[in-house]
Image (tube, rainbow, N blue to C red; front, side, top):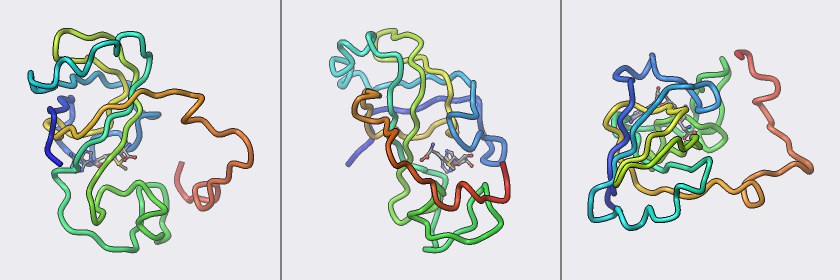
Length: 144
Ligand SMILES: C[S@@+](CC[C@H](N)C(=O)[O-])C[C@H]1O[C@@H](n2cnc3c(N)ncnc32)[C@H](O)[C@@H]1O
């Protein structure tokens, strides 16, 4: 895999970056390298998109982590913790508009300069579950 672009955001410090898109109203610019611009055709019709990217400022990992929202340790794969064996992140953001090979989005939770791996449409029919949803430790977490 190799990056297809860069995510620009207002955030330069990890501890000042929102921990999830649902807690962010920050505006970001998703800049695709020009050779990938044709792949954005028809994206304007989408209100939300999913960004997949590399946590490029993360190094190393442990399999048990204390995530942002709890004082207890959990297995890394039961969390969204950025230090993971493959440091890949996913953020669903609102697409505001496209200008050529750049997308202006709302709700970024990544550092400025984050390498972009992929973009996918957010489609409620595919991505939203309503029946039998359980969120495990998130329900009893110590922090809101
Ligand atoms: C908990 S992660 C969640 C990101 C994404 N929504 C997910 O679920 O994969 C968000 C945190 O990762 C850290 N972070 C964001 N961008 C990063 C990057 N490029 N490299 C390393 N850490 C990053 C910041 O501390 C931010 O608050």
